[in-house]
Length: 270
Image (cartoon, rainbow, N blue to C red; front, side):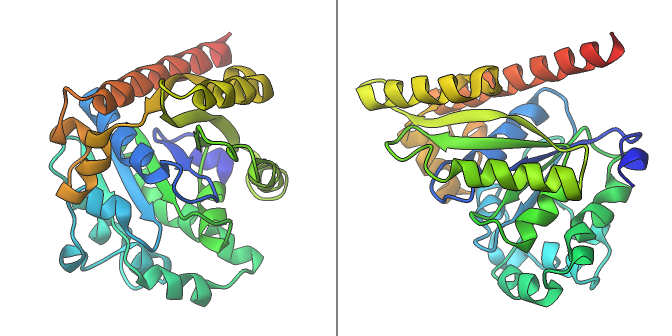
């Protein structure tokens, strides 16, 4: 199936880190918004039972009539679970706490890891990018995201234990690539919660760049009050405060992401 899917247009990007509180959902929401602002058609799939990406894109729980749970359990067609957002070119498949039960129901057999890949297959000709906001775990749902994806972006907070446990995630990605999705690669590492007033942030940045080299994005996401406030208003940062440092950072990340995409395509042609 991977060879067939690769003929379709959309690139599928999982935003993943099994540690919570690293800026994963913030990155999924705001990278998607910045890409949409660059005239890319983008779909965000909320694959976290907390549903924070859904809330942050203005889809409160009462409006989530059909969700990714219904799709994975074959209770609805995936097209029925797509919601428009306030952002032009940006759509959402939301999640609710039902995902906790969904993960239990679909189990952990080999067949269960391909459910999301099969579900999004008909959508890949409709979007430029499909971005999956993963849960802070390495359970069945996150494995579904990795199997369905072309690339993985890893947000990494600039804190003391930033690299702790990251090897486990890298090993999981390698295992999925070897056994379930040969097309899967690491898109890059994005440093989040960077505080220029704190020497620790720069030390962590240096350590991560030493470990991962050019896989680490040059753009760093700062600690920013406006960025933290935006989800509670159901808005990505570009709608909440486009003049904030957080908005500047995600616009820069989007530009760097697109530049990397162009270079990757040029290498393929060469």
